[in-house]
Length: 480
Image (cartoon, rainbow, N blue to C red; front, side, top):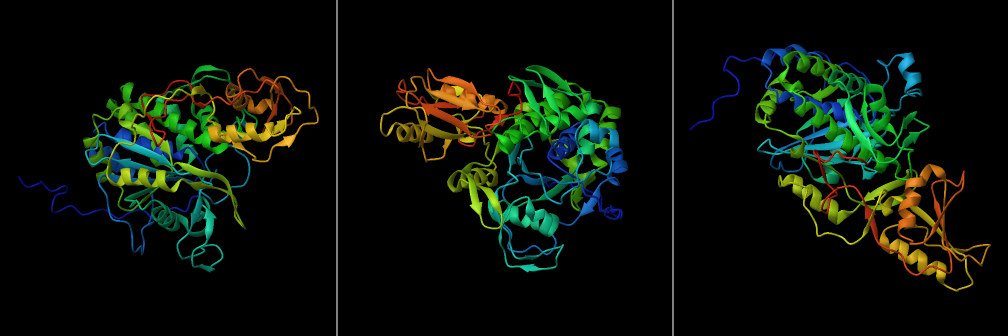
């Protein structure tokens, strides 16, 4: 049976509004943009979305692009969040610590893959500090031509805007990007408020002096401003930006759960209000408009939180120093290659692996930096402890030193109170060790090996991230 045409023969697209040169910002706008796709699943009529289409500013990120990756199955959307504060009131800036001049970099880069059957969404976070090699381009600020040079991924936007960002991501992932969406945190705050808040749970208190976040352990319903603090915070412990990305992914899962389980999607007025909040500060490619949202929405009416999955590209090396660039994150070439192949093949990322005997901890050892000291007269003990910790995944200095005290009987984990969760995770790998808080010590934890040391116990992060790619599905929004 022939497929019916998607538009009538007389359909003529109306002129697009001129592109408005805003400079949106940061890290959670990806959340609100994804919610546009989810909200379209309500099946609300063409007229409602068409009336809001003019709010979308347009960009052309695919202009003059050549030698692109082959198209896979399904649809790939690149979500980016950049800098900008033009719609934030002075009172909100002070209350939620949003001061400072904007930079012109992407704080968040995510690939959202929508399966060909429109029954699954896979979200892959690409860390902003990822080591990247830009394709040949002309710097849009200086006018200087580049034949390609190393940068942190978030600098691609500063040098070449959406076009260079898409080209760089495609070169790194070999995944063809079908659509581009760029959003700001004003729409994020409004969306959360219109939804009536989003519920999250934290196993430990979360406090960040930089964003002002101050949450006790337990379950909380976060409204717009506080939700913004939650997804922006990166100074809670030693996990830094990687920890922030996990919280963003968890928040996205909770937001989807809220939107799909509360009946909001079936309320046309609510749908309109939320869509207005989101689309008011979105920039998108010219091909992503009302008809695309409706087509996708009709196919996704049965979408549920368990249909969504979230992960971060596998990291092979942290702190990879690049001259003129600084400290970067290098992707694991084999694991990341398999991850992006799964996207191209339209395969689910979540796959359970055999149960591990490792002890579960709150912070993954790969996110914890450690300096080992030998607190005994036993030659080589410091090197043995360092090697075993490194083999378990901890980021040791690989240069153990001798402690000033050579008579330590019980192994000590010395830590700055700001990194207490990391300290507890490290202590779990050293049975019987003593936790000792040292204000001002900084992010590097110290292990002073004592005479009681026997061996390092294997540990792993306690979250439910599954399989080789560390995936969490949208219905797993418990405490983190």
